[in-house]
Length: 94
Image 1 (spheres, rainbow, N blue to C red):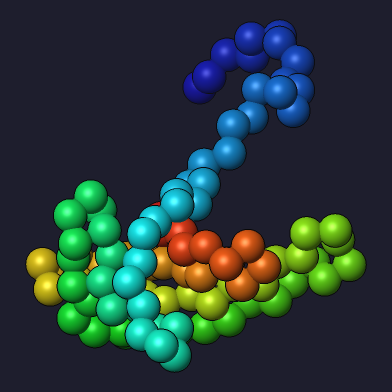
Image 2 (spheres, one colour):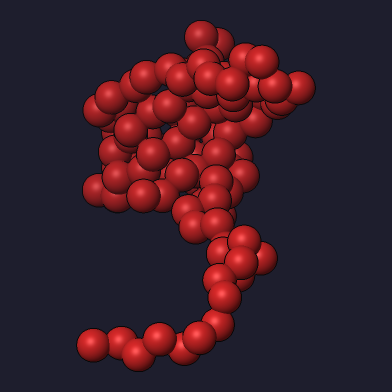
């Protein structure tokens, strides 16, 4: 059993985890991803799933993202998304 340290937990002690990381993506004219640079070019072998999230429309910076679960030719799987508000690509780990 863990002993009570007696310290008060405050919001400044929490740190975010799994923050999105900017990613360079080559895309088709339709916007679908073809390859990622991490740091070398990795070709996308297959898009296994895709979905869109539109949320928090009432805020000054709403969330509008198009996610892709991709398989690279190397066999690595990634979750990437295009931020449709900022027009940038990111990698998200879970």
